[in-house]
Image (tube, rainbow, N blue to C red; front, side, top):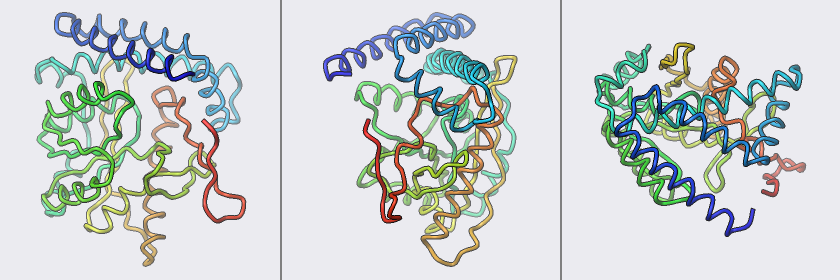
Length: 311
């Protein structure tokens, strides 16, 4: 895709989101969800690259399944993320009492226990289910959240996402040069630092760990922060239930790594967190971002460094 076509696509996405946000102020959720599904289906129809990539990644993750099963997961993914678009629009202005009816939450005591110990906690998750609703649920439950996020391809979308997250009391830190210091300060202030670690992100520290049987370059910042602050690493996920509501599950803290070597401990803790994410995806395969190039970075054949596929 050329630069001009990419800019046009980004601008159309922004205008679509602004239109949906305007509609969200006057439309109920049961209408916003099908509108979101329609936009999701249209986006996939117009993007053969993402469709092909999704099918390739499903073949890597589920080699035992046939083409028809992978197509069903693709359709479930499109439906889910379309509905998520409608839900995010709804979160923009819905009162807390209505948002509270959208989910049930288990395991919040794992976070409150960590906060009582006074060292904060590192919450690890992935792009599973409606992670923005999980952020809202945690904020409405009184959990002091600080989340690290990537800058998006359009600063206007960054501003919208930041306003949405801050609505529920979440402090937003953009990944970059000073992010580590800001996140360490959040832990020192006894906050919960939330990190999504299920994407191959360029130019940040990472390690190779298994993901669906393949080595995957995975951000290691969550493990590094937790080890330095002696804070627990707590996985948490959301998934959509058949009745349209969501389940937010906060799992027990991951066991401390067994290795005394810092680098190996980081790898071990990152691998354990990634295994928890894989388990969640296997339970709800239609609610993860299969179009993401999760195995883009490859271990170099020499064993020294990495190679990266061309975009």
